[in-house]
Each structure stands twice: as structure tokens, then as C-alpha cells.
Image 1 (tube, rainbow, N blue to C red):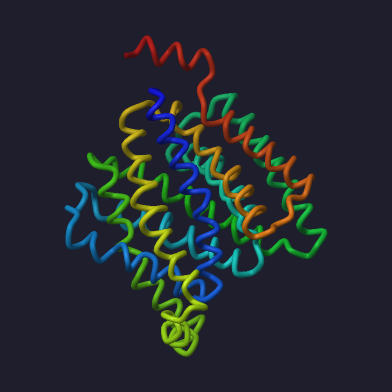
Image 2: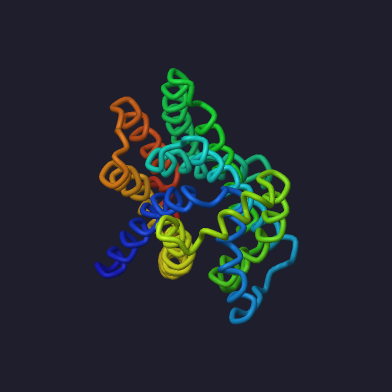
Length: 298
């Protein structure tokens, strides 16, 4: 990678890491299910009007939106609303990587290498450490909800892989068309019209400004800028070169949460987080033999 593209990859990690602070701010005012509907509605409308529909089968578009857009954010937002710290959420959501590898092996019959198996085991060990530590303080539910969000992301990854779009960014943007209607319906049933109405009626007050800015950040910076740059880099370089930069996301998320939200970084959770990151990094990069095979095939 060129120095410029390395900086762009780091910029994406910063954008995505700060995304968790933006989500935290938006959940301070809006109900979580409605917040998901609002986030994707703001992205869906200009997408329908301005972006060509991706050249993929409808079932993969719907599956990608259901996994990445609905399942991931329903459980992530619910987990953070239930008390999941923003920094820890940025770490636990990395479980999507080993989940994706395992699901690809089970559902798509992709072979797992010894390196991937070892990486998955390390990541699971680290996540188990976080879950055990949280269970000691009766705060296991937020971790479990966030893990379910990571599983939803993994299913979305599989749908994205099966779709094989010629323009991945178009698929990323059109995925936003799927969540708004079902999420609004779920919000009306679970959270109720009164909670939705109250959040909208006070949306333009000074107290709600951080929440509104948080939603704007997740749409513009987190999705359009972050995902757009990531798509460009993934198209320009092998995934094994670009993917490891995503390991900076929890580093940014946990550091920013400690600075701006005064979240306490527990030593045991930091150690468990390092194990998770090491496992994901190990499982998502090729060994020397894999790199040599890739060179000889090009």
C-alpha cells in the first residue's frame, strides 16, 4: 500500500471507532429501534433518488440489509441502551470476523485453515473473558446483545459475498433501503408511538442537539465516508492487506470513550480485548504459505 492509502485506511478506522460515540449520543435521546429506522431512512431516501440499483439478485440485497442493517444494529443499539459501554461495544462487535469465518465454513462449505481455526479460538477465548468478567457485575445482557449484533453482521457478510456486486459501494448504500420500514414497525410495537413522538417533538431542542449530530455522523461519516473509502481500498488491494486496519477500530473506540465519556478501562477487559484483536488478526491474514500461493497465481 502507498503511504497515502495507509493514511486513508487509518482514517476509516478513526471514523468507525468514533461511530460508537455518535451512537451513544443518539441513544441519549431517541429510542433504539426508532434510532435505527431514522438512521437508515436518512440514507435510503437520497440513495433511491441518486444511486443506481446494484446489479445483484434481490434476495441477496434483502439478506444483506436484514443481516448487516437490521440484525446488527437492532442488537447493538439495544445492547448499548441496556448499558453496554461504547468502547467495549467497539471491541465485542469484532466477533463478526470469527463468526463470518465459521458461518462460511458451515453454510458455504469454505475450508478453514489451521491459522483461521487458531485465530477463531483465540478470539472466542478473549470474548469469553469479557463475558465472564461482565457476568461478575450482573452486566452480561448487554454483552450478549452486542454479540448477537456481531452475528447479524456476519450473516450480512455472507450475503454480501454471495451477491458479488460489480460496484460494492452501490450495494452498501442500497442496503440502507431495507431496514427503515421493518424497523419503524418494530419501534411502534416495542417502543410505542408516544416515545417516538416525544423524541421527534423535542428533536430540535438544545438538549437533543448531540443526538441529532450523532445520527448525522453515523450517516455521513460512518457510512458514506467510511464505507466509501473502505470500498475503494478493498477494490485496490487484496483483502488481506486492507482488513487488518479494521483492528484499529476498537483501539480508537475504547480510547475515545475513555477520553470523552470517562469510561473506565478495566485491565482484565483490556487484556481480553488484546486476545480478541490478536485472534481476529491471525484469522484474517494469510500465512507465509498463503502469500506465496497468492503470488504464484497472479
